[in-house]
Structure formats: structure tokens, C-alpha cells
Length: 116
Figure 1 (tube, rainbow, N blue to C red):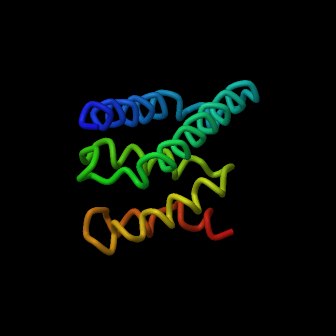
Figure 2 (cartoon, rainbow, N blue to C red):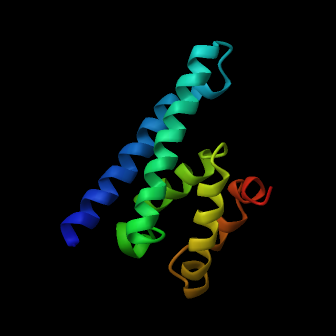
């Protein structure tokens, strides 16, 4: 399981790095670039859903601070996948209560989208 968690942490940080590299596409005037951004965030949202199925919410205790922040970023950018956002918020509530996830993450921009 340790190897799986290390691979998960690497995968999450890689997805966040790709996200950062592609973020300018989100507000591009070029519809093809906007579509590429939406497809990327949808793929990442789908994968985060699979991760939540297998592991629950990837907390810093599980995957490290950087990968946990990456998971939060992926959930935040899954704004066209409200089911993923709602599920992330639901799964984060217990770790936040237990002190193994940041309260700030529950209050950040993903929350309003998930509440719609």
C-alpha cells in the first residue's frame, strides 16, 4: 500500500502541474483552447472521483501536503462536475473535523459551486 500511496501522491502532483501549465487556456479567446482546458479538467475530475472511490479524500497525512493541495485544486477546477465537487466536500468534512485536512479548503471557491 505504501507504494500505491507514493504513486498516488506523484499522480496528484503531476495533474496539478499540468493544470498550472494549462490554466491560461481557461480564459483564452480561442474556443479550441477553452475546450482543451475543459477536457483536461474533466479528465482530472474523473480521475479524482476514482481516487476518492479507492482512498477516500487524499489527506496530507496520506499523500503529503503538496499532493493534498493538488487534490483540492483538482476538485476546485472540476466546476463542470458538481458531483465530484460535492463528493470531495463531503469526504473532506471528516478529515477537517479530525484535523487531518485544512478548514480553509472547505471555505475556498469550490464550495459555492458544489452548493449549487
